Image (cartoon, rainbow, N blue to C red; front, side, top):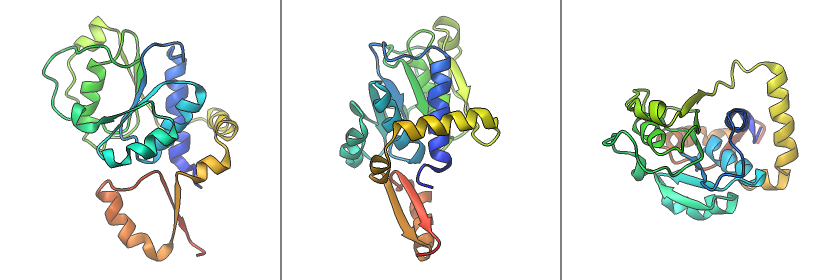
Length: 207
């Protein structure tokens, strides 16, 4: 339950990026946006344990210690990606990305990927409007990979679960999981809508 759909989604995103050529040999980090959330936290943890250098982007810089404890090599403010694209291409900063935000963030990330890199698009918290320029696709050959854990074929699902189980010890997983009794749900719902949840949240129906 601590891994949940978020764990599966994070691993599917990583495997999709690896299928497109992402390796630990790159000199640039892999960016994870919305890094303090459920998918983001597990993505940061899994990528770092696989040997990737990870740059974690979050709107809550007070969680920097949490993210570095998961294995992030650096923490970047979400504000760096919040503005609309003003230049078709920006400096190449990342060897790949897992984007949990969408909107302007996705467009800015695409403009900062290195040539032939990919971004796995997971969430649309920042909006579904696509504001990117075509230049990253034409001049750098970047790719957008949509991740849908719901329609994932069972063999691929089982492979992802197996890899997660081998990669993340239970003791480590527990460090990013908070369990609440059912009566906390109304208050938690407000925090979820406000984007204040950190890591994985589990509701214990029997508490």
